[in-house]
Amino acid sequence: MSSKRYITRRAQQVAARTEQAIRSVAKPLAKYGFPFRAPTVPRGISIPEKPDTLGSNFETDWARRPLASVVRSAFTAGPMKLMTSVLARPEVLGLDRLSDLARLDDPSPLIFAPDHHSHLDTSVMIRAIPKEWRQDLVVAAAADYFFDKRWKAAFSALALNAIPIDREATGRQSAELFRELIDDGRSLLIYPEGGRSPDGWAQPFKGGAAYLSAKTGVAVVPVHIEGTGAIFGKGMKKPRPGRTRVIFGEPLTAIEGENTRRYNARIESAVGRLSEESVSDYWTAARKAARGSADRVAGPETASWRRKWQLTERRRREVSGRNSRPERSWPNLGPRQK
Image (tube, rainbow, N blue to C red; front, top):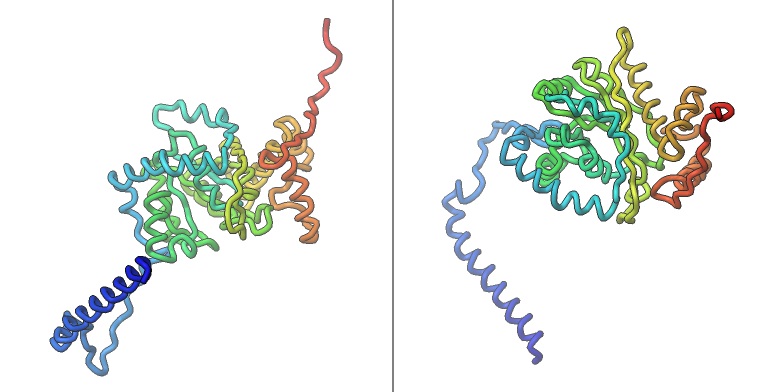
């Protein structure tokens, strides 16, 4: 008998003896009842169901305590930074649009509202957001996805400082929690689409970020994330390393008398302008926005095959593609003065 077969046989024998020993100990104890076995329930008595502690009911206060914050900072500066650098190689633009706020002695909280194409978006955003807001950043995550299992909920809360939120609507409980966090000086990362893009184009924005901004007076920062969908988009089994770009826009606040729907439309339009700026330049994006012809983040309203075709053409111009950017078209300022 070979040594490998002998070791396998001996392991099986040890496992069988261990199981028999456990049964010989547990069987006599079972007759004593509780706590060695489950307690009996008298007839006619119904035991109330345990309250659901997952999903939107998952408690995340513990993840914002000092010890958890230290662990999260180490994870962000170590494994998350390494993973993001290897997979995404992000390039960050538009930080000058936040420089005036960053220079304040006590920068006010902000609501960052990027488009959403991949699970990589959160790690890319955490690394891209300036340090003035990164340390106290709270991520709004889908309750039915990131908080459906206890281990997943605990990891999301600890590693990302995530809180559960309903995808469909910002309920009163979530709104009150957001307002408490903002009053405590914490900034928010909210994906207005409510979920990842199913086809590479952005989905219509929901009004959660606009509603919270209007109620709290905190500015919304539109953000465009380019390239993560090509690296690890929805439906992909494994990531394909590439390059990404994050562009921050000018902070927006609600105009007096403006309702949430119009404010939300302005935020979506601002992200669309950043999307055009990413594949061309600032001047071209500004000119197209003035004409109302800037690229829509939701893509063309046409057949699915044509949307895929136009997305392919667009990605060839993106940083994650071949990067064949068009020549810049600068304004004609007239003849040069001698």
